[in-house]
Amino acid sequence: MDDTKLPTLTEAKHSDYDAVMEIALTNTFRDGFDYLPARFHQYVDDPDVFMVLVERGGILEGINVYMFNDDGEALLLKTGRQNPRFRGKETSRRGRQSLPMIFKEFLLPRCKPTTLLQGVVEGHRMELRKLILEYMGFWGNEKCNLDVMYFQSEVSAINGSLASYNTTPLPPLTPYQPPDLQRLLPPAFSAAVLPEGRVLVDWDPYKLSESNMKKFVQAGLYILVDSTEPAAKSLSFGGSYMTPRGRLYHIDVHCKDEGLCKAHILNHVKKACSQYTGMITFCVMVIDQGLKETVMKCCVENLTLSHLPHDHTFTLYETDLTVMAKAAAKVKAKY
Image (cartoon, rainbow, N blue to C red; front, side):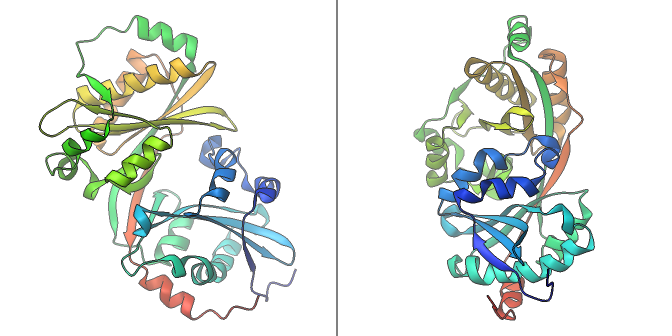
């Protein structure tokens, strides 16, 4: 393979699924709880998602996934997969070639002058931080941290734990309805609970807005809010997909109150057990690090779920497009 040639870039098609899965290492990414197999075809059909294949000499080097959110005001570096034969130093060198080309050909033409560049990255993956964050100007633009914890059990066992669950009465929650947005938008909730007015849904950042909430409802997410007036104190999102390690149900909790946090977890677990059978892995996300112990106690002690050794802390980064726009302007397309 001639490494002196610039790579060939194409948008992924449905027919590319098998080729991508061959290099994706889905059994190890996210500790085997990879969402890409379940969402690949959805991403192909979504006009706001760009899955760009990077090939050279007829060999697939990798795939990069980008997502426009907030009506084009945000561009999320969603994920990527690298062919295992090009690991280590090869990843950095090839990435420095392909990234500016991807931005020039696919992304910058869609961006607004106000579009923000976002990424959610594991803190311990230093090689990725160096390649993506330092190169793309993310250093110094940390917005928030989010903690993700994994718990697992059979539905039959969970139902038994729910039946014997004894606790003081928890705050009532109700499924989200459009009028609830008026209690979520005021600073009494959004500024106090959310990082800069953003919700994180399955780890992806979005502005708390009417259009986004409508999109979440249409996507079939289970959304819960407390009944506090005049401003709510909590909000959560739940949804499920299949992974190489079985069914995963994500629970994204936005609050600062221990009782509300427990109530959200319990309601989502009940919802999941009413919909599915067999083994379920719950991926619980909280932004307030003070709630980690609450999550652990609720899931392990109260619900008797098994705690899996896959907890991670992620950081949301944000910057403008200046760095990538300058880099992309220097690239001469040769394909």
